[in-house]
Image (cartoon, rainbow, N blue to C red; front, side, top):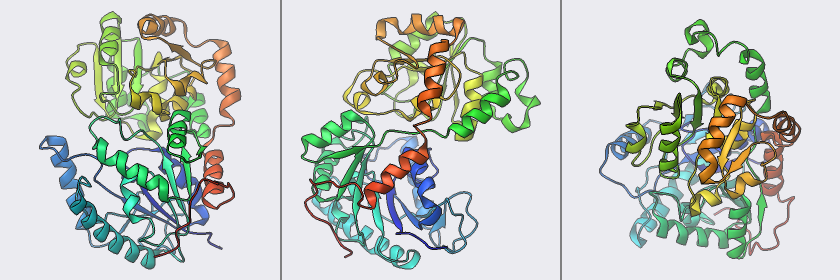
Length: 421
């Protein structure tokens, strides 16, 4: 097999959450060797249980004897690894970039460790994809034929992050990279305000996985016990099946981006259960203490279609803020791949899909959810979803990103190209 230009990727911890970057890289890794770098430093360290556990996890990663393959791979040898999984490294670094000293130390630590890993595991100078502004100090200091910034969130507005540091480093990164991709038009416009042109690469969907599950379970999961189906015998699904119906279901990170007053209003109104699936972050006590809200924990990505089949409506109750207006929720494509009614608060990223779901204002949200739980999605919505989602596969999105990193999409705003250090 002839390998194409290798990839070096800076993004969220591989396998921790099913991010868009992970979906894309899996589709690009078949004929490219990939080195994935897990990092820290976007969030100021706090003395709390979640951060302590996160720190313990990082220490365990750092003191492993060698780089590891992602879950599902067979060996640490790049020649015999699983084609769709990268080699994952966890470089030792400081948990902050908040001052010149910490930035200088991290630049030194990361440059040495990553350059060594590139030489050891990749053949040739890699193409670099970064989703993180904290890599601004590494451009030109580690091997990289082309650098692409894949802008996935408004880090300057995300709850709990080091906003000032990330905004400053993102500005610096935008000046240095060779190309930019953005997941939403709002983010693309923000990049344009900084003097760069961004290629829009919105989130995609694995439609085959969803279609198979919809066909398999649409007629049975409502009326049987989860234990009768070993392939879906998961604690989260069992908890959902046992909860009073109807079910208004959300999945994803449960944090301050949600309109918690709106969620509790829906829980007050419903005769069933509001189900919030996923990890929690920040203060979610108002939700956790409500008797009609179920928070059963996180669910593996491949089981999300089964959760959809247990839902009477899929909801996206985000509040109005800079960070929510900028994001392009990955869950929207997943919701629309089901046959369930989808109700979203009015955000820029969902307006283009208003013919496939209900995009409503805050004052109408609860009433619309209750109505759709009783009546289901409309025939028009289901037909439009089927027609439009054909063009939204992860494979199509990956092809667009490959065109950008290979230089087949010109970005005339790019000031210069960095060669290997």
